[in-house]
Image (cartoon, rainbow over all chains, first blue to last red; front, side, top):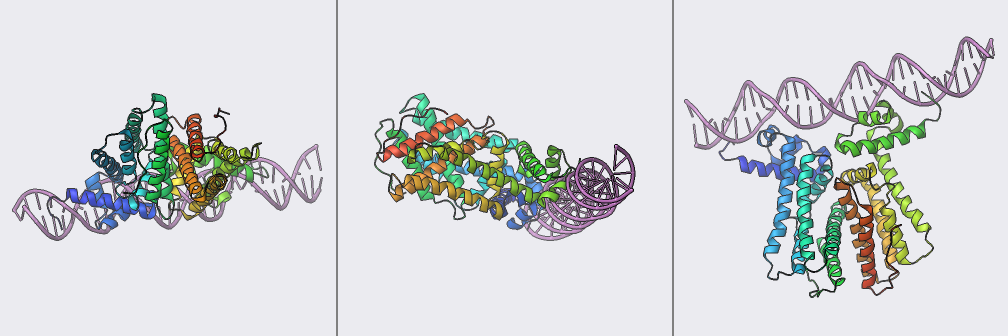
Length: 206
Length: 206
DNA sequence: ATTTTTTTATTGAACGTTCAATCAATAAAA
DNA sequence: TTTTATTGATTGAACGTTCAATAAAAAAAT
């Protein structure tokens, strides 16, 4: 089996296997052996490519955050209309794509979220991402309302997005992405209406 | 030290110590020895009073949920005004009391929340509580808007509450309860205004 | 009031299990 | 033949649980 240039392949296999394991039994019962079995390799290989279990977990969280950032960026660059409402709408859509809002990624995300409370490295990653979401939202809101109101709108919408997503990860049926997007967009429209902005026509699903 | 009637005292001591330990190092690194040291007793006593570590964790989550339910119930029964807006306002206030929204209870709650994804017993407790919050909100909203809209309003507000609370638990500075309450109340007012209800005067802090 | 007995609460060392990490051995490709 | 990738048995540490021993309080007896 040893072929040259296995590194990137194995790394991706192991990261995917980690999400699958966390989805299956939770972070607490995710052992290196279980991950290795999912990937069809031996346990020792994890230390070889990631230096240890922690390294693999960190790489996995990093990939989830990267995917999320990418999903938002793609939609924002695809906008014809550069209005604040369009930008924020794209951020909402991106956050409810999340590569695959259902399946392993969702539970893995929540597991890392909780874990990041006490692991400095994960907390750092978490924080960088949070700040970017907030500052993007705040910047767009400021184009149509005063600073203090923009701050509140950004915090409210960020909380709404996370709350919808969190509740979706916990319900056995998984997140209803359509309903979640509808609620977030409705809230966004209310925030704009509250400041007398012209609100574009109603949202139809993508 | 053996005095008669220690059971309720020790049980409470151990539950409090569990929250302190989870707040300190997280659920993953909370060992029976660490809990015991916090409570000033030996490790063996945990199995004696709770049957094992899992029993203690379950009892701890149960207490947190009970405290939350109590905080809401107290405020709702203290209402002079029985209007839907007043009831929902009381639910918001209760959810941001959470016995002590800052400190050990907050992080413990989030830790259990994540853990409940894969532990059936915790998931059951979690679910019962979630349903109560949702059905209470839904019932009040239905008094002023059609069924479908009430459903969405209840889901949106529940998501907002959880999202604010979740973000508060993750920021190192802890949750700013005043700001969180303001955002939730503002959202509530918007939901009511959207259906042309008379919205009472603005909220000042308690 | 003192001593003895019984009951209750608590300890902590020992045990068995589980897990992450290591590394010498192996096997396929170059 | 050399290089690269991978294995898997082994090691040592950490953990939850158990249980015989202990010690304090309460009850009973003197």
